[in-house]
Image 1 (cartoon, one colour):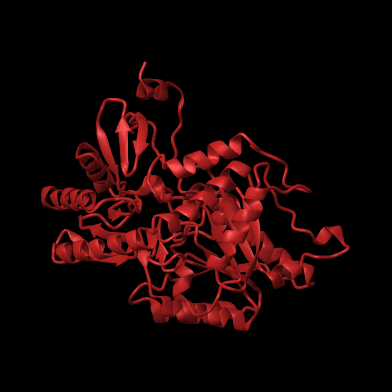
Image 2 (cartoon, rainbow, N blue to C red; image 1 turned 120 degrees about the vertical axis):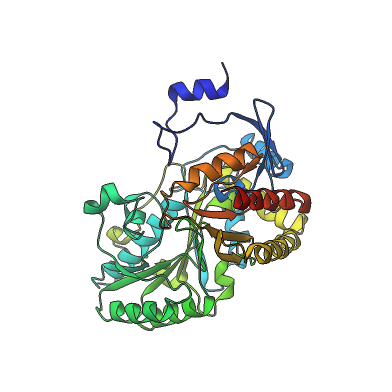
Amino acid sequence: MSITERDKQYIWHPYTQMHTAADAIGIQRGKGTMLYGEDGKEYIDAVSSWWVNLHGHAHPYIAEAIARQARELEQVIFAGFSHEPAVRLAEMLLPHLPDNQARIFYSDNGSTAVEAALKMALQYFDNKGEKRRTFIAFRDAYHGDTFGSMSVSARGVFTQPFHSLLFDVAFVDTPTPGNEETCLQQFKKALGSGDIAGFIFEPLVLGSAGMLMYRPDILDQLIGLAQEQEVICIADEVFTGFGRTGKMFACDYLNHKPDIMCFSKGITGGFIPLGVTSSTQKIYEAFLSADKMKMLFHGHSYTANPLACAAAVASLEVFEQEKTAGKIEGIVESHKAFAESIAGNPKAGNVRQTGTIVAFDFTTEENNSYLNSIRDRLYDFYIESGIVLRPLGNTVYVLPPYCITETELQRVYEVIKASLAKF
């Protein structure tokens, strides 16, 4: 039996209505930007396999680093023990972060990186004897699928079945063009409550909300206002990190520095799940005490898994070896040209681009929504054309691995233009 047939018997897929979904496509292997189906069909992976793949599929350097590590140490409890890949990754990652970041806490995915950050912020004040309990977040935010991360995310289709179980959050409008002043006033009002422990944000681009983009200047203002009241500012760079916005991290565009940062997705080059939460020394020291009740009560069985850390170290090394910054610049320029080429198309609304992300809203009679019916028709068209593009409702976006060639990029653009003509 094929992968597809066996999958249909046993597997429950994420974000998929299994009753109506088409059969899953069986993939046998990948190389570079390409995925190869068991039926012999080839696909350009134009969304980096849910935003995680940076350098291309089955990158030999990262694969060899994992294999080498597996022959030495595959896993060890990270409470009371340590190992070379975890320490080496911290040593390599911290110099890329804002200079106030001093400590690295490991977990195993983006949601848990955010959970750790939220608990750090709340317990920081609790350890100091202050009872701050509220977070500020953007109304369109998405920070993950665990309960804390859902709580600071938009109240929408992703969280609807669980609304009654989520904790209260002070939501403010996302400061997209036209909403900046409203957001600023709402933010000031929220700060006035005196109960704010943290401000969590996706810097510059809200991915799952439909690639909503906003200016660094307004985020700088918000962080500045928050830090005046010692509110802990948490940058969720799970999606935007490792070059997606053009710079290594989206926070590199800011003057104000976050207190806590969250990473996952591309951190291992797309090979193995890993979550990282970094913090300032000041936050770390608030947990140092002879009182064991002041330690951070958070952890995971696979915290700092050696294989995952080795993959992340190798991915950072590939950035240098392959001069990835230059590849990113090339994608940015190609995206700008593509965005200009479709900007006048009546079917392509709100064309926008930040770094290696280009997006637009496919104009339909329906409201912009994650459940917009155009999504399935576009997805099927792109797959039939040999391109992996997974629209967020009626939002079409391109987010390729950095190894993509100009020829491959132009093929992706051509298929998108064909969809604008067809639907």
